[in-house]
Length: 514
Image 1 (tube, rainbow, N blue to C red):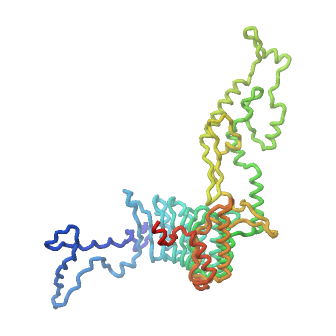
Image 2 (cartoon, rainbow, N blue to C red):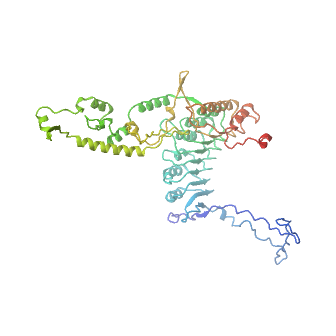
Image 3 (tube, rainbow, N blue to C red):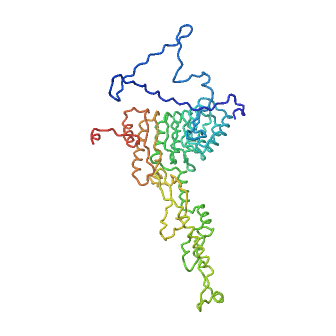
């Protein structure tokens, strides 16, 4: 494809270099006359070979054994380094690495044709590849076609347009994104924060975001914190070396502890609550296509009813109509329907067969729907709504609401329980984020105090029944605008060290004896 596009020289595809295995230990020979088995002695040094000499009598340096030499210009030639799945017979590519050469628009269009067919591709690493805004826009359009792509690393690619947020849009499937040293400013941080979460959209795929070594500053940190308010999927966030001060740290702490809803968020909360109380349009359409069995299907004096295509108000009216009951025939109609059998008069039930058919079909539909219901589940990381199943052995038929089989959906954070304090509506902040790195910034004592209150508030929330998520488990604040022996910093360290999953308590002599 490079030759067709007149790209000369075309980059070669090579295996990613790896360090070789360590050399084996030298063999030791036992001394003569030693009868003890398994006892090793010092190795006997072998005589060094005589150095080679050229025609002039000067020693010649032997070739190296631990590495290979190449031409100095060959090292700078563009190439595509790949990792191959060792278990796949077809040599499927799993990782792609491009280092230190500029990718133009034509080359990116070639990648657009080559990368989506790679079914096992899960990592793309483009380090200092000279990306532009147009290339990022093109990547955002075709990367969702790489079905198994999880990791995207674009370190060292400053882009003037700063449109990195397009990579984590609504169609994105990326789970881990690294944008280190990309000269991201307040503009790029505002777009990234909006892609993390707003009242209309929240990213549900991204798990890790690394923005280390940029120029976000306090204003950019405020935009990132605004995205964290309504995001309930991101687990790790790195903002080291971004010139963040007390203002940005306070906003991040507010998003993690408790915050007041703004006007736009209050309006969206009211809209969601009103929709929650009204019938869902999809539910009505599903009930029209597959009407649930009626509780009156077993009644002797009326047939099984079928829900009409009207609204709930119309349905209520039809239920209250007296015409829905079976009318007894009068006059000639009664005489015509009387059939004598063995001297006894019995009235015909013209809808009897329909009643039996409706009862049979409704019982089959009930069995199929009940067999597909899943057990209800509520996770701590994100609140989900599941359908509760009933025991099949019970004769009691489920109601219409219990037969609604919906996909598990994440509750919007705006729908969480709120408290009205000082004229403002307060809700609990983000407790899903577990790793936050704010090292090498400009945070002072006031910013550290806000972060300390945030982690303390999260600890109290975990004991409450309303809590969802564990809160921060790792918080890095080293090399900020405070000394290492600062009292507030020590309190944060002591508070977080017990929550760190990798922390191991020191072994005491008493524990060793026990």
